[in-house]
Length: 418
Length: 180
Image (tube, rainbow over all chains, first blue to last red):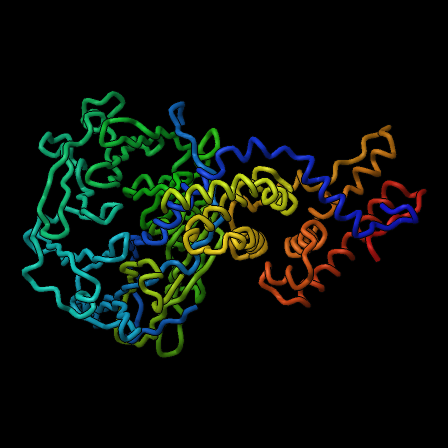
């Protein structure tokens, strides 16, 4: 306030702001700032290379041709949860492969067309009868899985991305395994985990986790932690829990077990230590009934549960976990525009970014077009970014879209990004 | 990152984190949010520390990252959720000393925190950091004319806030204005 009248001068604005900043004692807040920033920075650098998310897409019965167009478009032992970091990874994720399954008329014989990003031609290369592809977290290798045969066998191979794009993966590279084996990458991209381990651990022979070497698909078994085995057997008081997730590396992994009603979860290390013991206040019944998948955000603050019927996200930073986002799919995608209620979650691309899709169709007099919008959301369901993939339709074919895998944009700089 | 880089980074954080947090506090109005903003910007700087050859540019980089994350509406992070209770001036209790009420209602920082993000950023850059319009434009990644427009709107809004509060609370006293 100046001395001549009712006016703030620039100097008084400056002084007022400076006084406000000086009043605060930041010293306690700044203790350990360098360490926290470096830890967060390292995590950020890892995430920039580790944005592979397994795809899960439901089927839409819609008329379409095979021509695609892209339009860019708690308990006491709870560890401290770090504060969320405000660094966006919008544009850090590239769509590296997607596919369409089309049925010609009433005959249920699908034709599978896979589109993989070719960094050389800067186009999505079209292949037929391609395997399911999952990029390694570092974006350097791809895990390939063929379909399941009638006698219950599936096959896996690991190949470089150029070999996948060029179709240079020989049949001899595949290893046959029982269909119940479900491989995924270890977080350090140096191995593969059979995430189906422990799903039937009432059988003592199933009380181990199989890891595979990506170079030769050689198998190494490691025992499930005794604490996990105790909880998933029928002898466990209050009924058996079950394994919902196995993540980490061959050397250092965690097993997440969940109670029958999904209201209690424990994360147990390979050494048998319980590092998280969570109680969820409510879990939507449609999630409980259909074996949801589970994923913690990279910084451990949020927990996402999802299946084909919906998704729920919990904030674990507060004293009692609370659900901050929940959608149940409406089942109808014919509204002519994207319905946020039809968001299908597939995982996290950053500590505070959910990755998923919304699909819908638009109808004309002769055709129905299929649209798929890949979306990044905050844990609270607010849209951060999106990109649309659409399929021009026709009257003869019924197609479904699948986002197969995504990768670090820095390794696929010219691919469609989100 | 080698030990030398780590030592440099620690020294930089020790020297500048308070000043950075003060700026973040003026933007967010909340000390913990300010800490998170600074920490996140420092984390981004650490990722590219080895490429920040001119250490003098490190602070500029951190500040730019902080302002961008703050202003960019597409970057929706939980630390940016406004805590309205911290931004609305407290009502004047009955019988309170009127001079104190004036001081509280006209608290510059409280009024600035009621501005939209873009305008608030320009005010903090201009009147706290003493940046020129050109420098502010560079930090925010906008044109100089946008900076001037935002500041004009901010000052006009501050003036209106002062008038409204005084009309409501000090009907019998002369109104004060922000810079004309």
